[in-house]
Image (cartoon, helix red, strand yellow):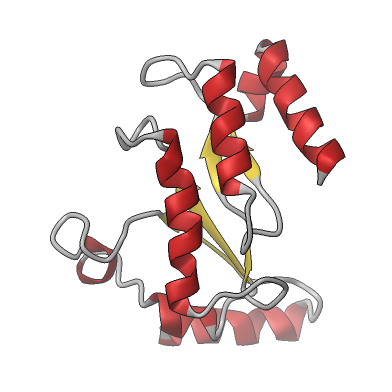
Length: 148
């Protein structure tokens, strides 16, 4: 985590108001024989003390997970000490993209709502191009943002 600390220091020097975000594969600690730490080197508790934003890539369909997995992962982040309204903020990225397979509008709605629950304070989707081509998914985004 030393290089993350260094990046934050450099960023603060160049642009003091910039946020340091960490985009990462959303794996639980036991997934893939401990790959979260062993392969990716992610110590979530240590990173929570440095980062301003966590953006787990919650691509449920690519990971062959259920839409509920998105909410389960966001809730699991509390293990790293993340609480509502405190840093790091949680801005998950959920899958709208139809590869592999197709993500129906109803399923996209479910992952958007699951991913936007506390401690998340924002949410993004992968990809904007998909929303432009699928009006139903675009309406899901509009509906979510209007209600939040």
